[in-house]
Image (cartoon, rainbow, N blue to C red; front, side, top):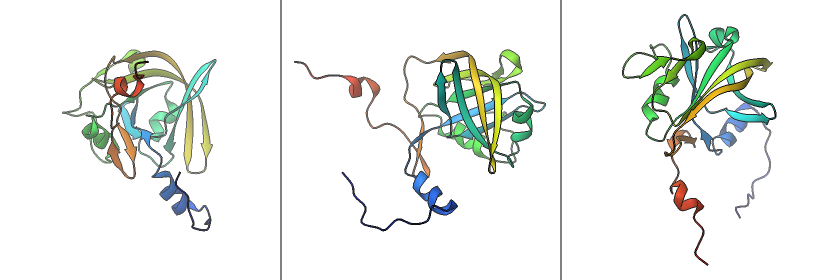
Amino acid sequence: MPQSTDAPIDADSDALRTLLRHQASTVTVVTAPGPPAVGFTATSFTSVSLAPPIVSFCLDLGSSSWPAVARARHVAVHLLAHHQQNLARTFATSGIDRFAGPTRWRTGPEGVPILDDTLAWLLCRVVDRVTVGDHAVVLAEPELLRHAEVGSPLLYHLGRYAGLTDDHDAATRRPAA
């Protein structure tokens, strides 16, 4: 088990950012209807509750996507597959049309953009937005979902995209008795 011999330091913004780079996160793209439609890459997606089902993600209040998300009744959260690093980069880039080619998408229920070929997506009804510091925590109730039967998730770790080192089947196999 790794142990640190360094003395604790103040948990300021820079120290926290450095520490959180060590946490592997699932890469998602959140989309909301327009005009114009918006979307952004997020690594803050998580389950909040199963009864009722509630998920959350966070968004910087200064983001170009925030005004649309602030008024959206529905959003979609897309879990990206390991091979979708370019899609993650596209939706993380400011000042471009993120929905232009080569991005493949369609208008889904409630007018929400649905990206093609993602590992999974959830269409969610926004139930609350909580401002915390310079971000909003968006709480949403999944209404529809779709997931692939196979595939490995795209992860973000130490400032770069990563994947799992072994496949799901190998990781869950038990040795023969």
